[in-house]
Length: 317
Image 1 (cartoon, rainbow, N blue to C red):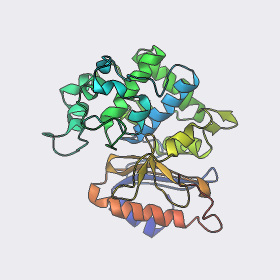
Image 2: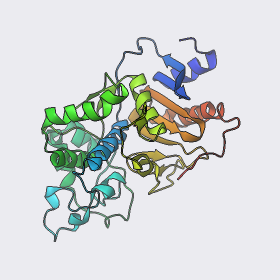
Image 3: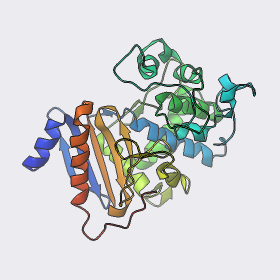
């Protein structure tokens, strides 16, 4: 572990379970809370959305999906349905116009809690796709886990796979080639990958995933993601929000001078890719929302330690 006192104090105070830093392809910092190890699998929460984006890119390269085809869900098959105009690209950008409350506390108003833990968990994509249109398609950003699960179902259907086949596809095409050997995606009652929320993997597995994006989808000289797909992920479509962040395609875009983009999830899960500094940060834990400012200040402090001679080379997109 060998961490300095300041690092240990910050991570412990923010309920962090694991923290890994890759610089120039090498692990330069690795920290685990008591009871956690390099073999522990942690919940991705919404970092899974970014993994869903990667899977969609694979299917795009296979020629089985069209990002702009409509409708993106069978619930909107009627051309007279205003939701008929929603495409996979709109869903990836969280600009579908569908009603969806992403609240993680109030079960009485939260679509997210009902989808993940209520009766709707039997078929999450169907539940999300039955919500009404409350804004014109592509007019408004609304972060919605339901959108990702609609995409996940569409992807499974386009590939013509059942749950076992889709699981094999994720492992053979994405996880195994980059050594994410312990990654475990979870599925809903309908056999659809819960692409919004549920991939369990080790901290180093998540670091490998970040490194794949740092290298533009190439791993050990082999192209895994189609050329240009990482740019789709990190090109801002909406924002900035109240935290100064933008949103791309199932990835958050920080808009800083280093070109940082990140998969981010509930309780402070983070896989941040910092292209200008050849850097990947992974943080996994169980932080309440009150810890968010301290965590992001910590990330900025870590990034600043690598900025000598490199600032200004990134593209914030």
